[in-house]
Image (cartoon, rainbow, N blue to C red; front, side, top):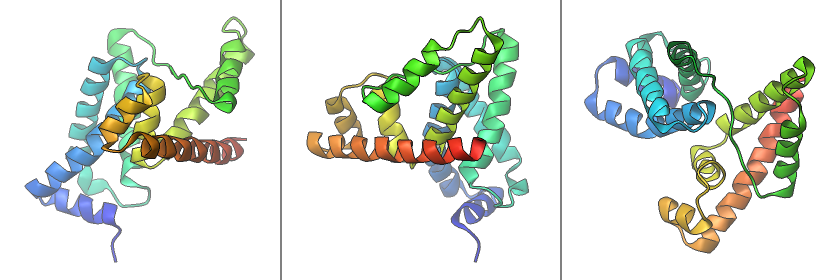
Length: 194
């Protein structure tokens, strides 16, 4: 039995318009968030990169074999588009995160403490940044969105609750679970990277 991602790719290849609408609604926000985090929060650049990513991926959707999750496959395209955008504009991609939890704050402070003047420290900072991104990329979309809204966009818990269609307490609970999922994902990604 084919995986849901493989079935989605098959329907997209067949030109199913309803499937395209579902695909775009589900994956554009995730690819946009993936790009935005790597483009210093530049919303216009992230939108351009996300749109180009989906267009290029759709043109090659028949080559998707289901060996990785569809989102992971899309991220490969997105990374190429980010690189192309950086080359075109002469700008660098980087990470901008903020967090009010003590554990994540300490991790981010460690990144900041690494001097960009020292090549070894710069390498360590970039590697830690890559691990943070990898952990965020593997969270469920709802968790990743909530964390991005709270810690990248600086939204209040009330605003996150409103976007999620939840009450304040439910939103706090979701953010707590999302932070825990991030910590677990980060531990796995960091262990795999060492």
